[in-house]
Image (cartoon, rainbow over all chains, first blue to last red; front, top):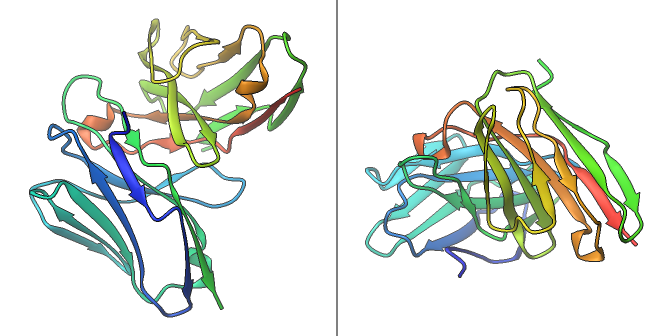
Length: 113
Length: 115
């Protein structure tokens, strides 16, 4: 059972455009939603994260939008740059005990010059 | 600080061979975990540890063993390698459980091929 569904699998965006990646979750106990960014040959690294008590979090060109009732959250990359080309993973976990992160399957983003 | 260090970076094994993937962190993190990354499958948790001497299974533990004798090290053992274990393996650490909004720090991975 896939608890975090991510789409699209791949995405091509022109430089300066907006990249949008969507995730949906099933477990209503989830209350932490991070996004990880992975460059080729490297391990993933935390990009931005949100808690369900806010509907949006912005850090520079990166914004997470969160819809608790729909159990969905998305990553928006404004003014996308070639350096943003990477694989992006959404994830979710719950704040209890030794909860571990459940990752989506990833989105490969290519920003064309 | 080196962060999370994984060795080797690349490894080729024959079916049935055993090996140990090494992982060390110098951030004094209590929580460590192993993931495998396969195309189209995302990151799947193999095993994790919440401190020295304490380990537990993740989503895909079969064929793998772990132990945690020190805070710094968390090796992953493949008992009898199978082609299905061809993957990229990532070790990660964090100072608290992910449920406490603690970011995972990943190593740069070990690319394993089993022929």
